[in-house]
Image (tube, rainbow, N blue to C red; front, side, top):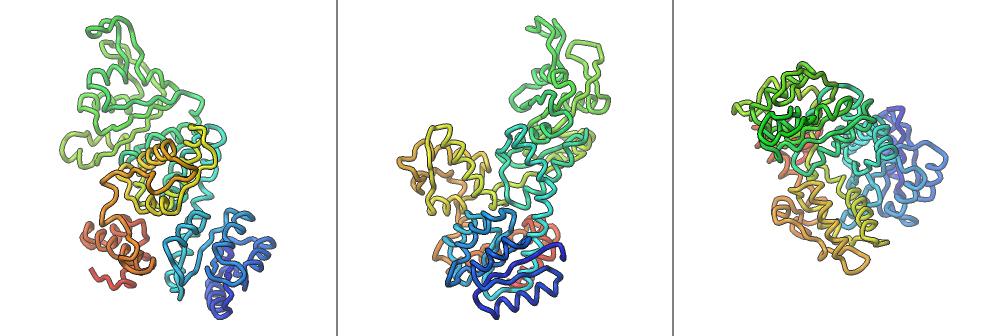
Length: 454
């Protein structure tokens, strides 16, 4: 803990003293400030990792302090402490870069878990920083936008896997960005200057797929009037990305397995064995283990593909990424449509934050593009948003006024999600925690907090 420093900013001395003493005993380097201006002076003169700031202070609110701190050091993790929680305050804090908020009176167990989460987040950020820099600077793949711990974990695994020759299986729902991640892995790998070839398996029939993958000899079948090289030959030295591998037929699975085992191919209608040097990345939105049990996917092929598995979580499970994605897509489509200084209303942001995104990042991008194209003024309004029917439901939307304060609404949602996860896992707390993106310790704390005994 000695490597992390925390600044407590609060005009109430008793609150400062309690938190200061508690965090000092935990081994942190701790600073204390009675006002926003004093906090800014400390940030300018010291290395600060985390700021715990009261929201309501006489000279400068925590929300006003936040952008000034971020201007000095954007890597500082900022947490708002407030007894005045509203949806509007939380949205503003998130939009300006706050990591999270915590309610007064501060629960010290909850504070421990929040700091633990911040430290884990910072470690993962450092680990994949090089990957992001390479993607943006060298290959303009800046569409990998993320602030969530879950996506940091994804990028961390991708960064390490990129330097190997191992096959990678990328799983996730439609629209989560599996092909984008595959490109990222290729373009930061030692093969980055060689071809990156994409094969969309569902778009091709079995016979056509074999020809596309392995090529064919002249006269191999009707219409084969000349020799054709397959995608594996074209990708020589580079990477081939097999999208939606779960749709591959059993006959083609056998041939792909042989290719992975022997690093060779034979063109359709030919007998020559051709050596290849191609890195294979595959993706699917299906449960391949279930398909193995059903007898529609080969177990030996699965293990050949699944050397490194990366699961991209759906957008509804990493809501911290929604705001930065909104900003990115507004910028992208403003430029494409020659529009400048486009903003978005708080009501529109609130609606987008509550939406469930069955189509994931791809759907969010479509929503923003349509809004930018059809908007009448300079600000995207709630009325400009066209959201799918499936995304908003009584279970996925937090409604103002229905459960009281923001804290009460969040607690009700947390309780429901925990009950649902425990029900899905038959009470297994480890698996339930994994579903919720929580450590088992964090889940146990929340269960105790909400008196959940199931």
